[in-house]
Image (cartoon, rainbow, N blue to C red; front, side):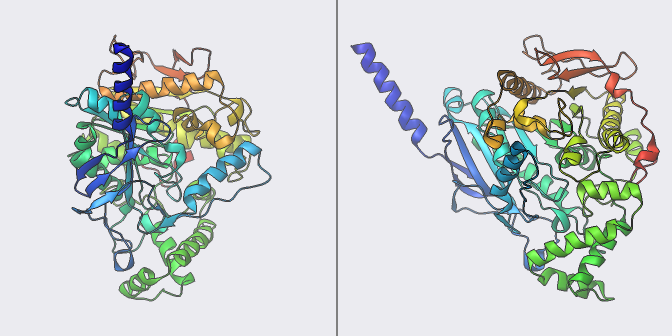
Length: 524
C-alpha cells in the first residue's frame, strides 16, 4: 500500500512538472514555453524573435539583434520568410502530393517579419541533471535559397530532444531577393548574416535551455548545407560553433553569383515594378516601398528573364536555385575557396560531409530538370558529389577531423518513379526527423525507423564530441575518419539490412571536371 501511494505521488508530481509552463530569461525577453504534445517531457519554445523586423526602409538591410525584457509566449511557430506558395501537382504520385501539402502549412503563413527561431529541450533531463549542459544541434533548412522554413513541421526537433539528449534549434533566414538582393551599393548576402545572428543568439542564450554554448554543431541540407559551409569559411576567426555537417550542399554546389548576374536580376525586377531609374538611390527607395508580394512576383519573373540569357550551365543552376542567391562579395562568399584553404582561412572545426545516391532525381521528378541521363549524371557529379569531395579533401589535408557518408536508403513511402529504389535529394530528412509517415500518409517500415534512429544517434554523438564522438569505443556509432591518400573510405548508409557499412570510397573517386562547374565556379 505504501509503495502504491509513493508511486502515485511520484506520478502526480511528474504530471504537474510536465504540464507546467516553463520560462527562460533571454535577450529576447522572458520566453514562456510549453510541453510538447507528442512528448510531454520535452519543452518547446516556438517563434522566438532574434532580430528586429527588416521591413520598410530596413528592407534589404543586414539584421540587427532583437532585445526585449517583456514576456514572450512561445506557443506557436512564427511567420516563415516570404517565398513562393507551394503548389500541389495533381500529376505527381500521391506521396509527393502529400509532401507538397505539408509544405503549404508554412508557405501560406509568411511575412517579412520572419527572423525567429525554435528550441526543443528535454525537461526531465534538465531536472535529473540540472548542472549538466547538453550539446546543441542547430539545423539550417534548404530550399535553393528561395524557399524553406525553420517552421516546417518536417523539421520538428522534438524527437532529437526526447531520444538523444541534445538541445535542438531551428530558425528562419531571408530568402530570394529579400535575402540576396544583388542591389548595387548594398551589403550582399544578408541572409547569411541572418544565419550568423541566429548562431550568436544561441551562443548567448542557450544555457537557459540546458544547452552548452561551447558545443554548438550546425548542420544543414541542400542550400542549408551550402550555408553551413559558407559559414565555416566566412567566420573562421570567431566561428562560435564546434562542428559542421554540410549535407547535399557545399560552397561549390549551386553556382555562386557574380556581381553582374545578381545586379542584372535586381535591375530587371526594378524595371518590372517601374522602380528603375539611373539613380541607384532612387531605385532602392522605390524597391523598399514596393508591396512585398508584388516584389516577390516581379523577382520570380526577373529570374526567368535573366536566367534565359545565361549559358546552358547557368540556366541549369538557375533552374535548381533561382537567380537570387549567394553572391561573391569576398566577405561572406568567396571567389576561390582553394586559396582560402591554403591560407588557413577555414574554422577547422570537425566536419561530416555527404550526399545521396541519386540527388538529381528530385529535380527531374518535380519537373525542374529534364530527365536525361547526361543531365542527371552531370548534376549528381557537378552539384553534389564533386563539391563535397573537394570539401572533405580540403579539410582532411588541413588536419581537420573529417567524416564522409554516402546515403543509399530507399523506402516504399518515399518512392519516386523517376528513380525507383534510389534516394532522391532530401529524402533522408524525412527519415532523420521521423516525419515520413506524417507527410506521405504511408507508414514507415521498421528498417526506415531504425535508419532514422541510427542517423540521429550519429548526429548526437558528433555534437556531443565533434572530434571523437564517432570514433570513441563507448559510442554506439563507429565511423572511420576520411584521410585522403591513406586509404579512402566512406560510410555507406541505408544500403543494407544493418543500415551502415564501411566501403571503399568508390563514389567519391569521380572524374570531377571543372568545366561542368564553370558557371560561378572558382579556379581550381
